[in-house]
Image (tube, rainbow, N blue to C red; front, side, top):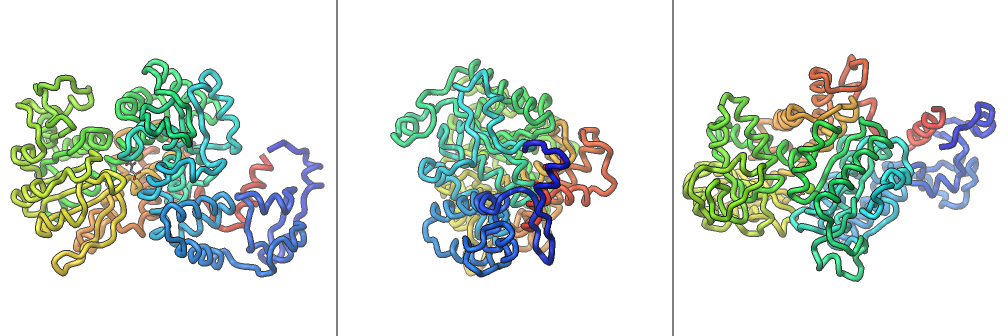
Length: 577
Ligand SMILES: O=C([O-])CC(=O)C(=O)O
Ligand SMILES: [Mg+2]
C-alpha cells in the first residue's frame, strides 16, 4: 500500500459511522464490491451503497451475514456433484472471503469435506478445470536465480505462514506435478477455518520442478512445466533458494509447512531445515501428532498402557515414520529404553518387513532406525502372524491391503484390535470401515483417514474416527506464528498430541471415538495454539517479546474476525503503518 502524508490521508477520508455503518477510507465502492477482502455483497446497507456510489448495483434487499450464510448453504446443498461443490466454495472465497469463512464456521461439518479431504483429491485430478486466479503462487524451477522476485509478486505483504508442495507425492496418488496445487490451498484454508489464522497471513505455494508421471505430464491440459524432475543437486539448490527468499521477503518468523513432497525429498529437507528455519512437514510430523492422540485414546478405551502395545505399519513412508518416531518418543517418556521402545514398532514396506538382512538390500537411514534384526518376511499376513500386533496402521495407499485374512488374524490375537486405515483418498484406503467391523466381528477400534458416516453393524451404530492431520496442523500453525516460534521441536508435537487426546471425554470413549468429534475441531485448534505458545515461552523458543500475561487472550486477539467491519479496521491499521 503506498504511503500517504497525514494531510492526504485526511482528505481521502469519508468517515461516516452511524448505526452499523462503517464507511471509511479511499477505496471506491466498485473496488469494494470486486475485492474479496472488502466485499459484503447484499450486506452493504443502503446508506453505505449511497455513500460509496454503488447504489443500484445491488438489489434493494439488505441481508445480515447470517442470512447470507444460510442462502449460500442452500445453494451449496442444491449442488449434486462433489467437484461442483468444491468449485462453488472456492468461487465464493474469491468473491467474498468473510462470507466463505463464516459459512465454514457455521456449517463446517458439511462444508469442510469439500474444501479439504476427500474432495480436494478430486480437485487435483481435475486441476485445470478448477483453476482459479489467484489462489496459489506458482514458482517454477525456471525461476531459479530470481525466486525472490516471484515471491514479491504475491499481493499480500505480511505473510506469516506458507504451505508449500512440489506435487511429488500428492495424497495416495504419487507424483502429480503442478496439478497438486489444490493441496496447499486446501490446507491453508484450514489454517483460517479451524484456527482463525488471518487469511492474508497465509500463502499457499506450488513449486513446479517438473513431473515424473508421464500420464499426468503428457495430458494436453497439463498446466505445469513439461519436463521431468531435476537431479537431486539442482532440486536442492532450488529449494534452498526458495527458503532463503522466504526469509528475505517475510522474515525468519515466517513458518513454512511442507506438504505432499516426495518421500526421499521430504525426509532430506526436514532433516536439513528443521533447526535452521521455522518449518515442519505435516505428512511426517502432523500425521504423527494425530495418530499418537488416537492411539492414546485406543489404549485408554482398552484399559491398557502405551507400552502394552505392538504396532505394525503397512507402509514405511512419511506418515509411517512420522508416527513411528513420535510413538518412540512417547514410549521412552513412559520409561522404556531405546531397544524396548523400538521392539514395539514394526514397519512393512512394498518389499516386506523392514529388516536388516532382507535380500532386497538397501534401506534408507530413516527406515533403518526401525529395521528388525531378523529374517525377512514378505507378506502382511505373515508379519501379523509373527508379530501379533495390537495395532495395525495403514499408510501405504495400497487399497484393500487389509484383507479379510489380515483382519481376522487381528481379531484372533486381540480382544480389541486397533485398526487405522489412514491412506487418502478413500479409493486408496487399506480397508473400509465395513470390512474392518465385519471381519473382526465388531471387536475393532477403527479409524479412517477421510470423514466417514457412522456405521451400523449388528444393530449397533459406530462412529468412525477420522485420523487426519486436520486435528493438529491448524492449531500448531496458529500457535507457532502467534509467538513467532523459532523452531518446531519434538516437544511441540508431543504437546499438540496430548492436547488432542485431553479433549476426548468419557462419552467419546464410550462411543469408541478415538479423537474428539469433528464439531470440536476449532476448540482443538485453539487449545493446541495456546499450549504451543505456552510451551514455546517456557522453552525459550518464542521470539515475540515480552511474554504474554494471558496466553488465551494473546492468541484470541490475533485471530481472524468474521465480522465485515473488521475488514475496514484491518485495512486502516495497515494504512496507518
Ligand atoms: O490431506 C490429507 O487428508 C492427509 C494428508 O496430508 C495426506 O494424505 O497426504
Ligand atoms: Mg499430505
